Length: 168
Length: 168
DNA sequence: TAAGATTGAGTCATCAATCTTT
DNA sequence: AAAGATTGATGACTCAATCTTA
Image 1: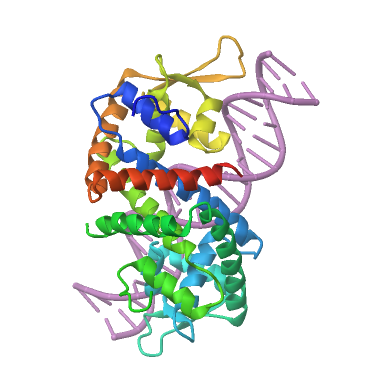
Image 2: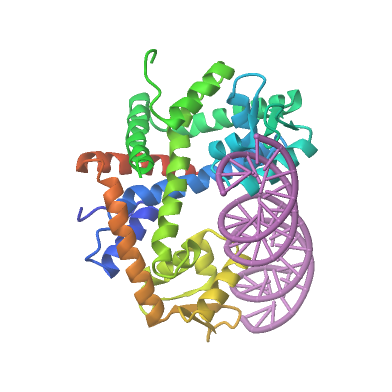
């Protein structure tokens, strides 16, 4: 690793740290810094795509959880909280917005009045399906810079890394 | 891919979509959804680590850019904007905070009074060095679930993916 | 007129306190 | 009490408008 050209923003970040703090092992950044940057780009891509369908990333998050649940596509607010990794206060607000827009309905659970059940409307279903479809197409283009085996290898490596997080 | 067990949250998300929308190719999610989730976990890890050093992720972002710049560790506000991928308004506020805390100084450029120069203080330097050192240790543990060659392979695959984003 | 930084309005997030039902 | 959802305060972000200097 001596005469490599600097080809990447991450490479220069790593090189910068090595120069300044030579005793610290910054090689994990070669992976983790790229993960962070990729995630930022992906976030932008999603924002763009969803805007074509009058959705935001955060509304899509909720709608897509509902969509993947078995018909009648209904989940409790608490289930949505754990599925989307946000706080309960955030979820209350998200549901407010979705109901206002006619993309979901909210009702008290008949069996336990503390529980709020959120259900996808037909309009919400059409909206989220169209958005996902376009998103998948765009993501396919991106991933296509890697051939099939490379894609699978990458998915597997990421799975291992993710699993090591989940253990904690 | 018929009798695989569902081992992962991402696997079940992908399986969910395949069931609901079988005509959409959701295999890119095997990669990109894991990237997003990894980034979320990383964000939490960084928040934790930086809290030990009385820093937040966003203050660290700025301080680390300054730290990697050549002595006297001074950059213009505009350079910091491009380095950290935030808007200029955000950067103004970040600089305010860093100056208040004595981690950086702000002055007008002598050669062009429109330009604001931000410089790391010794206190800021010690703070960011300590934070990076701990972060690197924690990230090393995480990445260590993969052996050396796997780490390199992963870094290379991510580099390709990132490059394909940068082209757009 | 343009470049660079700042300000202010609006959005969505978190956290902690509260209300309701069990 | 405890579980679930809501409310309100606060924080950091973006965008657009503004101010200052070149």
